[in-house]
Image (tube, rainbow over the protein chains, first blue to last red):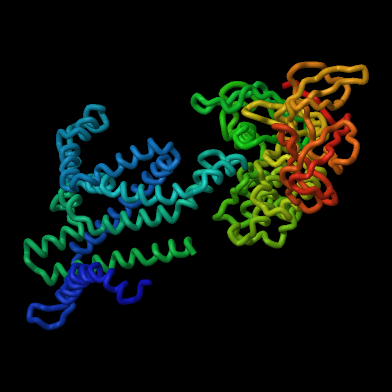
Length: 274
Length: 351
């Protein structure tokens, strides 16, 4: 028989770790964000961020890039997950390994790979140039396209695996039934599989979006200093200009933004499960 | 309504042959059962008719049109699955409308009318707005049936649709299926491993074993005149006794391994190796003092009380013979009994 004390004893280390590593820093961050230079309470850091068009531009860029990245991940991830769910188990294992393998290498390494591929004379621009799509050699580095490409590669596994989990549970006979009722393969995909996979697509997109808005390494390396995102701006404030209170305020804004994005998603997926 | 012609259909999964050249013609409006033990290929054959499996060789025609390489959605068939396969994200009404929507049959309001009519047919008109998960198994099955008939398919395919229902519901559904078939006259192919179901529902029974057709015929014919030892054992689980067949002035006689001689149905050719088929319900048991007419004496080994009837397992030398006796004939294990067999019901088939 377990009772409450034993439960507490078992969960204790985890709860303690969470408290130390999550609650404490977040509390400290919240405190810092509202402390002024004189030690009194203030909203000046928030006001500075939210009234400066430079920072609002950063927020806007972070949001629309994240939405774009999330959408691309879902659009690529859903058919990929469907195929993975429907191939024979041996092949599926290899596909999963193939999807997970990039996660085994550091984000820095992978991003550096993209820098090589996307830079001037790199494989991608060079191929475009030689095929005649563009007039001269060019670089894709330090563009929003580079950020999107790099981030999609980083986040695609998360989206795909989330969707895969749900598609695997869809009864194959539903597809067969749909086919015998006059629906073509693509009509079946649209009217049967897509709606039933929606919880997975929502969960995967949520994951991709939250990871995307708070990502730092890939956007910084591929986008460069002229295309900062919120996480990079926080990093700059914390390490270069040493404005910790301002960095804390930006962090709070990012945190609240993510939570706001989470709410409708959770409501939506909660309703679907209910 | 349409004829269905299967021509030399062969199906292999890798190196395993599941169907060895099945040829069969099903006339328009017939109710045909594919009957056989699990693994005999009956479900694979149904899936081939539906277009859910490709044939390895051979071909098939529906209403005269070659559909061998036509995808399922263009075959104009309807299939009812064992698990019903209702679309869980759609209401009952949307499920039943689905085939009409996908086949673009009629306007929205015409579709509504047909959906309602199909639901009324299965007595579920009042549940149209429920979701499938809110229905009982029997109701889900009726929805699946409504969905199968709503588009007026050329051929209706049923894959063991009654096997998930409890005994009473199954009997009700059997009656409904018969009535529905009589009313709509749809060419129907029904897969089952339940011989009673096959015999009671169909115009024609196709008995399958190990990827081949063993026998095709009307239920009475399959039951009364099995052509192979498999057919006789599978249908009604008859006794199969190895015998020699001899001929005398009065007719054919079978010689049992233990030496007893039984007169058998006329027309049996003499031979050294044959099987005597004795249906369980044709064997008559009497107290051992009774004079045996065309039969032998045996010992009761086991008694199983079944309600209206009692199943006895008899022993005769090395043979075990099953028989079904009326519930009033009481013998105990160990009792000797007189066994008699009506001559006309003792069939001989070649071994």
